[in-house]
Length: 361
Image 1 (tube, rainbow, N blue to C red):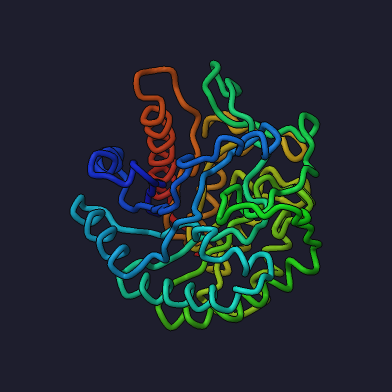
Image 2 (tube, rainbow, N blue to C red):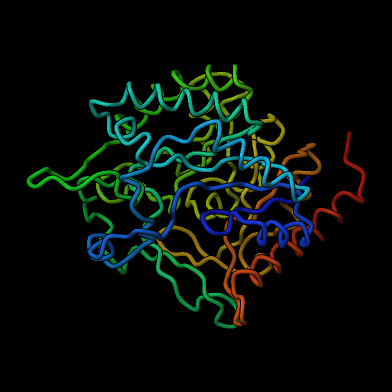
């Protein structure tokens, strides 16, 4: 198993790549989206006072081969490799998600993006087919010792508050239009849209040598902001994989999110999907609680037995990348670095421990 790290925005830089290499990381999961930048002044109020409000992507241009090639070259210059690109800009596929008039044109753009990514040497693109996206979190001193992390509690806000026009995934892809009714998407419609997306894009990804890796819904509620949730229990991962049988139709397996699900067993799901060779890469973080209320925690301090998770992956022959997708911020001059250094060190030790034991035949 390989150790990875998520980097985005200003953190896709030489200094952060040096930090990654020093921590034992060999692979980077890159985010081109401009999280928490360019947020409209009323964005948090529109979101009901909860977040994350990720930003404004209304002027994004489609990422190209040159963008990907420059990223790969920068990462390799520090002795690292790209494991995946994570999350399309909502600007690129808003009408695919919303079944709008531009969905076919947007699909052609995604096809070219996938071809360019494969040509540049990016082997995987993680995505979350979701309207509301990640929403409902509150930041606070919820982790051990008062470390800052995020929590979700459906009792503390209006989870049915509609999504403002011109936004998906808590990012604004165009200006709001007055008088437009809020988005409402039921489960049947959402799965129909996903099926069309996969049947159009997976064959292109397979030809380009790229895996499309589906992230489950976080928070894994039944619905959020008037929109159904797609993968909010492990069995729905099976349903997603059944849409089209291809090595390019794969999973971004988020251990923390699956643990948050009120239905299904985390350890059984890890074993089944690892054995089926359907896990493209793994998000590794710990949590306490399940929907409708949970808090993210330090990697060694939640409801998940992380040693058991790594042992199962080892037993099933998983040799892909493990990424600490989130980490609590520690009280020190560099909270982000300290939190991720702790997580990476713990993960590295677990991998070394599991690797020292022979895998069963």
